[in-house]
Image 1 (cartoon, rainbow, N blue to C red):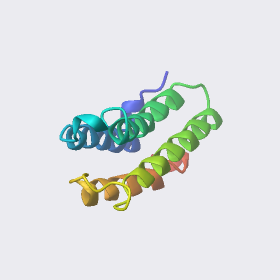
Image 2: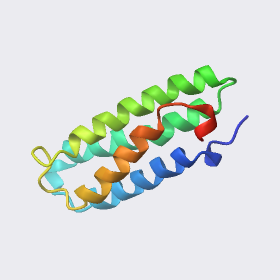
Image 3: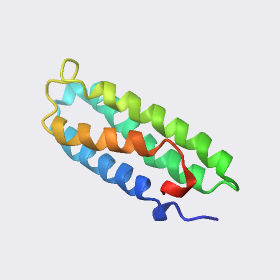
Image 4: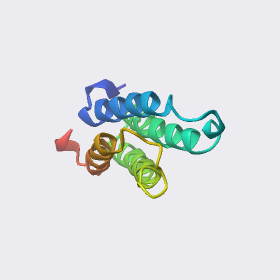
Length: 112
């Protein structure tokens, strides 16, 4: 089994997840099952899919899980749009991380 912690993109996704959890901790209580949950779920899905793909037996399967992670990154990027996400205080920094993770989930075995 290959260790997902060796992948830079997994570490970036993990860091992004920690940042989103920290930033959403300040959301209003009524957002617990709304936007906060959507942000956390889509964000946590990025490194989770990378980890699962890395445990698979070949690069084709890893590539498929990277596509799923890219979809989660796109979903998160949408939720971070200023128009739909006014209470999000860490928007600029997190958006940069999302875009970086999104680009890195385009699977190229030599780039990891």
